[in-house]
Image (cartoon, rainbow, N blue to C red; front, side, top):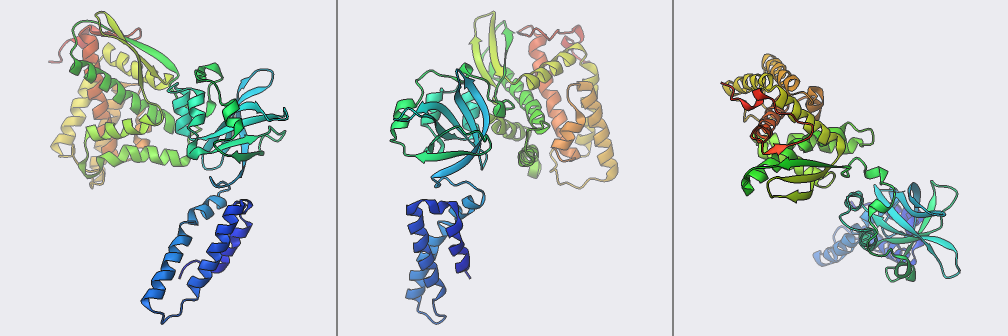
Amino acid sequence: MPRSLTNICSWSSCSLTTDPATLRKLKKLRYRYAVQLEIPAGAGKSLKKRHSRRFLAVRKFQHSRRSCRSGFSLMATRVIASLEQVLLWYDGPQILLLRVPNTLFVIAVAATDKLGNDLFLGALVTPRQLVQYQAENFDLRFLMLRAHRSAWYQFELSDDEEEIKLTRIKRDAELIRDFIPEAGLFSRAHEPIKTVSLAAPSAVEKFDIDGSWNLGEFSSFYGQVEDVYYIFNTVDRYYNNNTSIDEKLKLQEAFLRPWRGGGSYLGFYGQIANDNDQESQLRVSGIQYHSPGYVEVRARQKPFDDLINLIARFSNDPMPARKAYRNLYSFMAKAKLLKASPDSFLSQDYQDAIRSLAEDLSGSLGAVDFIHIEHMARENVLVTAKVFLSLHRRVERLNGFFAQGRVKHDRVENNVQATMIDG
């Protein structure tokens, strides 16, 4: 039985009814629903088919009803927002960031109406758009012209920062034509956007390169840097106080999903990279291939510092980590667990042994908190161990480039032992 007629009628109290066109649609839907309910049990196939089409038309509007329940709909002509941040102040607020329901934002610039009254012109944007804007992938003009779902608003800044009333305007409104920012206004012109500070690159780091390189070697070096950086960045995002419960669950799922059915290390790092691509992508900001040359990257400071600390510690004394790696790898290889699924049954003795060996490897590597990786893996000992094995292999490869003298960083000093072959 479809939803009751009273549920459909209750839409009249919804904020959507402020729009006359939507009101007409809702009235029409109530009529269709009533007809649907009155189909007699013995009606012919033709009649049932005709009314089933009407029922499908009703279902197309169910998403609007859900949007109303959450307090926000893209169809709504009026929206309530709260002030998130003043991005630019010059004799008054010039650029604002507002928060609206459904984890969306409105970025707005100062404007005036025909009577000279102070207004703001706003554009609906997603968190990902904000991250890309903060990273200077495009300017403010582009961001506002590419408003999410083509939703633009005008509003006055009220004293109540928690209840700012936005009125939706059409895409051909004069306010948009007159006050959309000029090209070339990038995020560096105003305060950093706090809500995306966890995601946007915040530092520029440089690796000095020398000697002879082919394209495959350079790709391998950068790939190892990316893999380790994204592991640290994912852990940092997970343990940040601003990360929601839903986001944390997604981050944990990204750790676990690639290993199911046996999985692969490439699949794991591919999943981690895809997850970070939307949030905190490591970017090459400058490169010079001539020897000596350099590679300059834009990254978030903390995970990049963790990456450099990991390389520096390994380069200074690699022997304990190499020994711990061999012990864990050999144990899992003999038990045929290197390709085992995370759901594989393990006795408590096996779990304790693997956990102990993985903790030894974690402690030898340093800069990698065992408890953090274990928690990200939802206490799955197999996944935790595989992550540490893969981290060791990547830092070993990165150390090779430093040991050869082809890569240098101010905070990494290559020890004689790190260059010698472990016999």
